[in-house]
Structures are given as C-alpha cells and as structure tokens.
Amino acid sequence: MVLQPLSSVYTDQFENLDKHTQWGIDFLERYSKFVKERLEIEQTYAKQLRNLVKKYCPKRSKDDEPRFSSCVSFYSILNELNDYAGQREVVAEEMGHKVYGELMRYSQDLKSERKQHLQEGRKAQQYLDQCWKQMDNSKKKFERECKEAEKSQISYDRLDNDINATKSEVEKAKSQLYLRTHSADESKNEYAAQLQNFNGEQWKHFNVAIPQIFKNLQDMDERRTVKLGETYRSFADVERRVVPIISKCLEGMVTAAKAVDQRKDSAIVVESFKSGFEPPGDYPFEDYSQNLSRTGSDNTISTPKNEGGVKPDPKHSISKTAKNKLWLFGKKPKAPSLEDFSHLPPEQRRKRLQARIDELSKELQKEVDQRDALNKMKDVYEKNPQMGDPQSLQPKISETMCNMEKLRSEIHKNESWLSEVEGKVSTRGDRRPSADVNHHASHGRESPEGSYTDVPNQEHRSPPHQPDPRQAHQPDEFDDEFDDDDPLPVIGHCKALYSFSGQNEGTLLMKENEVLYIIEEDKGDGWTRARKQSGEEGYVPTSYVEIAMEKNSKGAVTYI
Image 1 (spheres, rainbow, N blue to C red):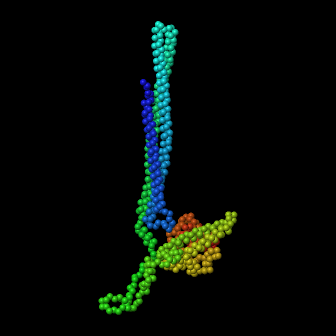
Image 2 (tube, rainbow, N blue to C red):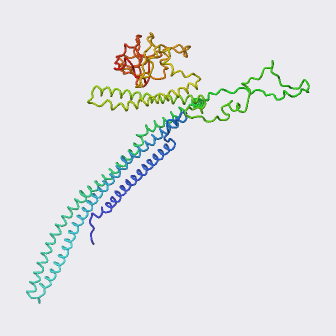
C-alpha cells in the first residue's frame, strides 16, 4: 500500500483559496467596469446638457438681449442648467480619478500580490513533496535490502545445515549474508534520517509555511473587501459633494421662475409698440340726398341741416388719401431715409434717436479723453525732449480732432431730429453765441486750431439748488449751461480734500481723494464746476478741493 503525504489533505483547500481569490479580483474588476460605465453616462449626460443649453441660448448681439422677464428667467434657467452640467462633469471626473483609477491600480497590485503568495505556496508544497519522495525512496530501499538480507540468511542457513555443502560454499554464503545485513542496516539508518527530516519539514509546512501563506491570502482578501467598501463610500461622496452646488442651481431655477412678472412684460410690450399717434376723430356724415325733392310725409326721416348754414368742419372731411392717414394701420407711407428713423412711429423714433445720441456721446467722450491724453503726452515731450518728439503726436491729435468734429456733427443732426419729434424748436446749438448768454460776441468764435474761446458771465451765481417743478421748462442761466449741447473743455484738475454729498440739484457727489476734471472756474460764489471720469458734471465747493489748472486755461480753453 502506497501512502499519500499528509500535505495532500490541504491541496484541495489551497486550490479553493486560489479560486476564491481569483473570484475576488474578478469581482473587483467587474465593479471597476461598472464605475467606468457610470462615469461615461455622466460625461454623455453633461455633454448633452451643454449642447441643449447651447442650442437654446445662442450667441446674440446687444440689440437681441432679452427684455421680458419670462425670457430673462428662461436664460437664467439655461445658465443654471449649464452649471448643473458642469457639476455632472465634476462627478464624472472625480469618479474617474478617485474611484475607477484607484480600483484599476489596486487591481494590478492585488494580482501581483496574489501571484506571489500562490507561488510561495506551490514552492512549499513542491519542497514537501520532494522531501516525501526522498523519504519514500529510502524506505523502499530499506525494504529491498531487508528482503535481500532475509534471502541471504535463508541461503546461509540451508548451506550451513547441508552436510554435502563444501566449506567454501558455506563461507561464501556467510559473506553474502554479512554484506546484505550491512546494507540493510545502512538503508535502515538512511531511511530513519529521511523520515526524521520529512517529519520536521512536514511540521514546518503545516504549522508555519502554509498557515503564513493562508494568512497572507486572507489579509489580501480582507484588504480587497475593505477597498471595495472605501470605493463604495467614495462613489457616494462624489455625488454628495456636488449636492449643495446642484441645490443652489435648482434654487436659482426656482428664483428665476419667481422672477417672471406678467405686468412688467406687458408694460415692456406697451412701451415697445407705443406709437405716439393720436386716436382718429369721428367720421362726419356725408349727405348725398340734399338735391332730392321732399315728397314724403312729415314722418319721413330727413337729414338734419347745419344750423346757420355752417359748413362742415374741414377737419372732418374725408378723402381717400386722408382715410389712409387717420390711423396707424392704414396704408404705409413711402419709406423715407432710414437714417433719421422717420419710418418709425413718433415714440419709437424718439427712443431710437435718443439711444443713438447716447452712443455717439460716449464715443465723443472717448475721443476727448484720448485728445487730452495726447496733449498731456505732448506737454511731457516738450518739457523732456529726450523722451520723444512732440511733433510725432500732432498727426494723431489732428485725427482725433477730426473724429470729434464728425461726432459733434452727428450729434447735432440727431438732436435736431429728436427736437423735431418732441415738437420743440432746435435752439440748443444757438445758445452759446446768443446775446442773452454771451455779451461778447467777438469772443464766441472758433480758433483756427478748433478751439473755442469764451468770456464767462460775471454775474453772481448762487450755489446749485433744487429747481421749482413749476419752473421746470423756464430757461435760466443755470439750466442753459447744463443743457448746453457741447460738453465744456477740461481746463484743469482737482483733488477732493473732503467728501461732498451733492444732494442739491446741479451739485456733484464726490468722495475724499477723488480726482475730477475742472471745466469751469469759480466765479466768486464759492462753487467750481467739475466733471467725473464717467462724464457726470456738476458743482462742488471750491474750498473742498485742491485745484491744479492747465497752462493755457487763462486766455483761451480748448472747445470740446
């Protein structure tokens, strides 16, 4: 009977552990694949959301900006949705980095560790099997030697008892018995040594090596389980971290929904399409039966005649051409030049002209600022020739002055159209050289370089005050100066030493250390007219500012 080593008892368990650890790694990779597909879904979802937002929120010009609250709210919802899509992208990115990437790296490490432990187990098993084979071979050899010694013993006993056997035969059999017995003893010793060595190695195998390997595999599997739990938690934490931001996005959508105001939208529609036309008058009765003879009874209904022979009011006479002009929805007039917006209703025309004037005024202010900067640079070059040639700036200054004149001309033209729409006489451009404002007409001329000289009125002027509403349309010197069509030139700079509230009409709010442009000196009443960098003008107390005048501000100032 061939004995099997005791290590074979644990072989099946070792194979089972091999299968179990392989299943654990397969499960880990399966979960990794799940996370990868999930983050791909998030990426696709975010991309589709962004495409949806881009589709319904295209790039638009300034004129196409939404005005209705419903449209503004919708675009706000689209912006919030775009932010929401960004959070979905964050989820996908975090899942890819902290979950999927971590799982893939850990899976590779786990495979390497498992392979190492299994190789150690197989090596230990192979070494024990080798020891068992050596012991088994020595055992079989001892068994053979014992059998041969028994045969030699029988042969020697037979010859020794045989009276016919010669002495040499007996001696030979005795010598053979001695050799076999000696070999059996050596085999016995060798077998005993191998058996002792195998028992020692087997004890180490089952009490030290295999338990340690099994413990390593157990630790590895437990760490795999812990890692799965950590990635499950990370998977949820990724979602949980973006929940506050997503909640804000949803709150923004709700806020945008609450901002929808039907009354405001209706007011915008009314303001947009308000024409300014007067409602048509009553249609007069046109009597075509005046030349017919009256033969009917007194009860016949007749057309009432005009008392006193008064002729019908010519305002109420209707002709085919007049009928078409009574109401907005009649025949369209011939399309005039679009530059003055005369094809629009009065109210819409007024708005468009005002918007154009504001835009041209902003462009003019830019040119003015550029001209002032160039003049300052020119002064610096004149004082410090090593820094640059002052004449090199003259072409740019001339070009800027030319642009300013063009913009002024455009502003004048549009303001005349605006005055026409508002039903006023366009006299704004004639105020400055008029005798009522300037008593020195000889000084109200333009210089060859495009400058304007003016001698200011020496009358005492009180500080700006809140005007009486009843005198809102009565021109006075103060209002005339602020209604002046051309902005006054910059004649110096000042720095605010104290803050000034500027609560009265015509005064200018300023903060401490704020730098302002001076456009009119103090006339002796304690007020200086200044302009902010934003273009806002008004009066400030002279004692509140520190003034620095330009070099050429005494005799003549540049007209802008």
